[in-house]
Amino acid sequence: MRNARGTVEAIVAILVIAAIVVAVVVIVRAVRSRNRAEPAPPPPQDPFDPGQSTFGDPRTLRAGDMVEYLGERLFVRGSLRLREGGYQWSEHFLDDVSGTRRWLSVEEDPDLEVVMWTELKGSDLQPSAKVLTHEGIEYRRDEHGTAQFTSEGTTGLGTSGRVEYVDFEGRDGHYLSFERFDGGEWEIGLGERIPSGTLTVYPGSDR
Image (cartoon, rainbow, N blue to C red; front, side, top):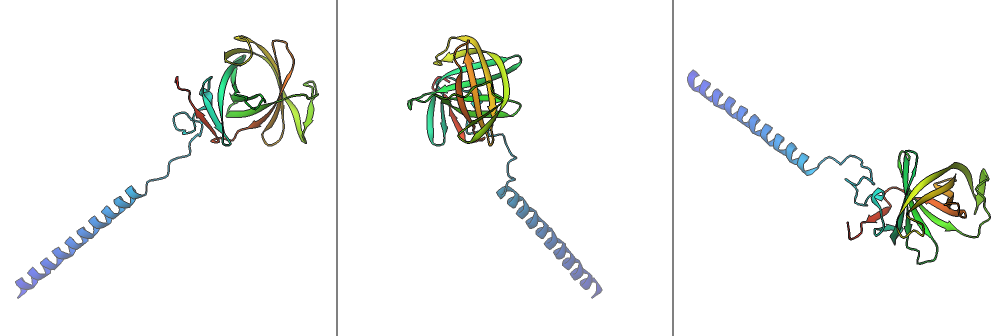
């Protein structure tokens, strides 16, 4: 009887251990399956990073490309590459079927900043002022300098030259700028900063 009882106890112990092992295996498989079904969310990414973004990279814009902003698609007709000392930026002129000249400026200072500019005609605003007001927005003089430029595509300018600029900054991403190319007349532009991820870039067919 003792031997039989010992054998039964041994069998019961084996069965309990086997049940525990089976339970552990089931739990481990369930955890692995859940981890595969629920991958960790991707880390935050720069929406203008050319290696990550589906919106395109404004830093690569050139004549022949197309951009879309607020549901409107516009072709880049020409580009200016500007340099002042070690600092560089670009201005891209857009098709102006509406008769109003518009362009995009793209610069990193140090963060990427893209601004949509619209030509302001018939204004008596002067770049010598320290503070200017237009349509209820107050602009304060921010920067003034002279840069060298090279021209690509259709810009209405020569292949290279000089531009003097005076920049004013307003509230909530609004800007006012004066530019004078090769000693000509001042041209005035009203600018509005484009939020990251809202501009789509379509490279031209020759890319």
